[in-house]
Image (cartoon, rainbow, N blue to C red; front, side, top):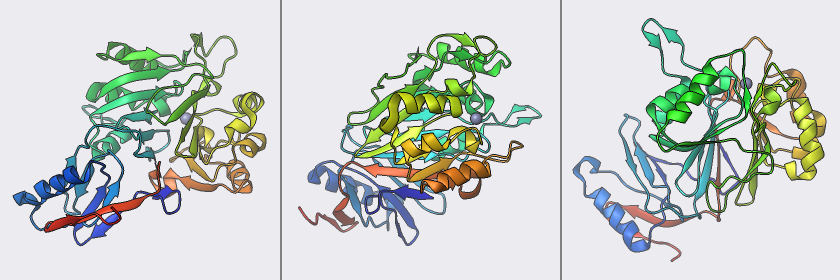
Length: 358
Ligand SMILES: [Zn+2]
């Protein structure tokens, strides 16, 4: 399911057998060259490009229901493109994948590991999603906190993809070894630094995109000492872009929520909320939601024995008017935002290109 600001979502054009998701922002000349060169290729014969959206630098993906998919990378990145955030259905666990407007990307958590099979572990649920997006590199990987429903897929990510930077909270899960293994892989990843961001830090991910850290535990600590709860050490990020804001909360619960309300107050206000701790009753407190006031609330949840999402959390979300999207019921959710009002800048077919409004 796809969401966006009404009238400004990236459009889907389904025409005949061809599904185009186009976003491109070269000059008119290079746009027409691109389309002409595509149209002249034998294996694309018969395709008609019906719409052309911009400005953007996202490249284009052309796919057909039959399974043919062609990815064309965009030209040099700019800050005027769109941002897409996917709340990935990974079963019981969290994974949010972000395509930034400058062509870079980010992954906040990677869901659980794959199921053990006879010859080892199967690929984790996140693998299929990332493959479907053609992802071979992730510029920014965030592990909100060291629980297996968040780090389980990260081993696969480090083993199979290039990672540019790893953001980690400081607390160690002393009851698990999987988090240590992931942190070792991060340390061994070529050209990948590990950072422990602190509250109030700003992360520089893309021009025009604000990424502010609101919560973390940057200092090394053990879950068994100091009374620090792992969930409440989750890295919390607020992203802002094009007048829209999103709040990613990991698995924080009432204590961290209360601290955020005291520290940030109305600054918590966000259009989109990644609901804390899979809709646990101890998260999404009324005082917190009263500050966030989300229009859309994404709950990442699968089959579980905890009763997630709880009726209590769902009721509190509904009472602030949030529309809830559950990955167990609704599948992977997407939120897309363009920096500028969307308008078609070109309509093209194999026979030629026109640029209405230019
Ligand atoms: Zn969790």
